[in-house]
Length: 105
Image 1 (cartoon, rainbow, N blue to C red):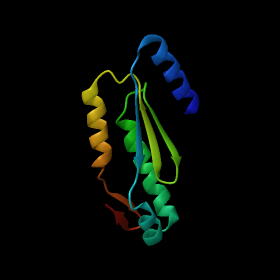
Image 2 (tube, rainbow, N blue to C red):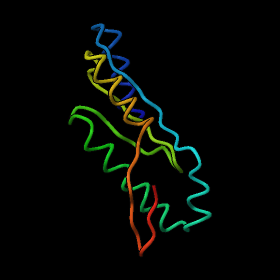
Image 3 (cartoon, helix red, strand yellow):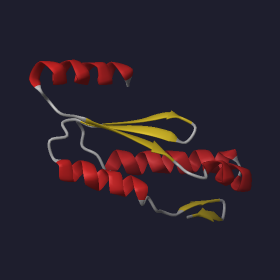
Image 4 (cartoon, rainbow, N blue to C red):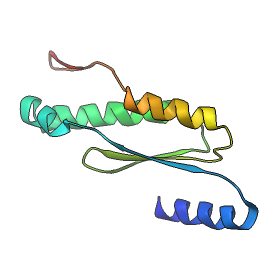
């Protein structure tokens, strides 16, 4: 991911290209692990990564930094509406994940 960002910064300086970097930190995720266990927490993080991956284009990048933190790189980010939409999607991320009879919302 660092290499990707370096390439994009280099290209932006050279050609005035625009890209966006979104940082996503899931609030209260420790409570999920404490209440349902780490195995369920890992399942939830994988589901989140899949949903994020399906919501971006092939030219974009979704990366998990660690724990409950993700980075989304939108390249190019010429459509500000797309960037705003994805930001709202991340903020209002809602979904149900079921595992061994347990459901998280």
